[in-house]
Length: 81
Image 1: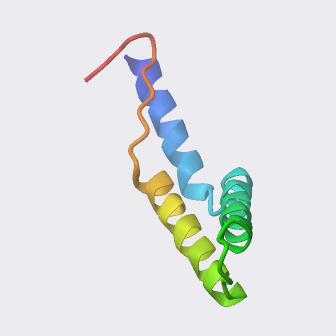
Image 2 (image 1 turned 135 degrees about the horizontal axis):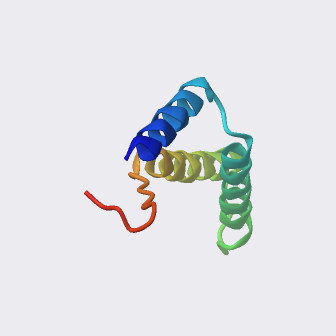
């Protein structure tokens, strides 16, 4: 049990020092780009660039919020609460 507590404390220390994860930022930028480009290209009627960017921002912000808020659980050796 002592090893799991030490591991938990180490992970908490790492999480406190982390401000911005570059991998997550890249994921959000790719999503923003894909949604914005698809909003411009797919519809048959004309879409303004500002509206396409707004749709991309809403999609990327929603995805980032869900990604940050969704609880992540890691089970070590099948030990559950």
